[in-house]
Image 1: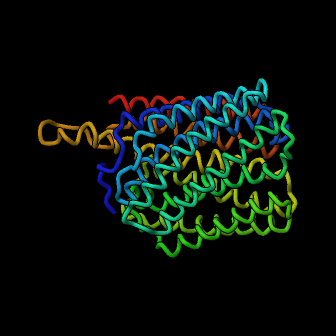
Image 2 (image 1 turned 120 degrees about the vertical axis):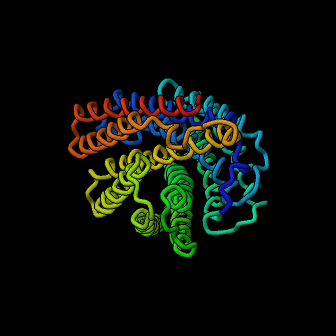
Length: 406
């Protein structure tokens, strides 16, 4: 694989994505103080928080990562690089309008939904055409292409629900699971599963899983999400049960591959990236067992399971790889041309190690405390854990801004 930065967009284009993602994560941790952990997950409190976390943090981070990694994987330049000047603006404004809709009046939801849909369409068009013109065609690139379909379908289904909340005569229930699973399973999880098979061997000097091994995880997840969408739209409970089982099998197989890549590292350096990957894999394992027990009838484990999946697995996967992606981009753009002319810093020197350790410790401790609070339904412990998460988020945002400004 050609890892030349020649395929990557310039840092001035991508800097807003990293900053907005980190700031959104900080705001999501602050918003935790205003949540009631006992109310339904479908309440506007939790739905608003989930959209801030998923759109502002997760989606913005994925767009930033895929803008770099997608062209590198297929060894082709972006088809419409100029779209990335517009995507972050449309997504940010759309998210703000949606938050107004969730917390003040639903009248704002369709307007925010339109802008979010526009940002997703621009990303999907550029990414799909970029992948098509590439020279590499593997199960990873196939997962990237499929994730674009689920991204658009998930946003469209969300827009349909926004119209329903505003007063349109539309049944929300059939669209709810379609929206959730197409975005979290079909886009976020499928994409993270695919790109992590590239990033972990690249950053950890470990053995990469074979394309056939990842194909099993990919096609199982693909089948599960498609069946879930079908079962939700036509209200077929048996089909939804089969879909959940397939998705659980896919995540279990991927989890085994994840651990295999981590333990096969040739250079075992326990840096912040590595510890973030350890937290991510433990969170994914616990989330999987919580979901399995939930399906067996222990309904109290759904909330901590989702929390571990979103904040533990996805959150630590994103921030851990930020510590590798950001220094790489900044160094190659600003310092690589000066290598023969003057002394330049090493990649790892762009990161403040002490600040990174504090961020990792606070984020991990906050995750443990909030997960335990959700398990025992202790509001005070949840607020204490949220406070620790806020400290970690502040250090992460400071770190991101510091690296970009170098």
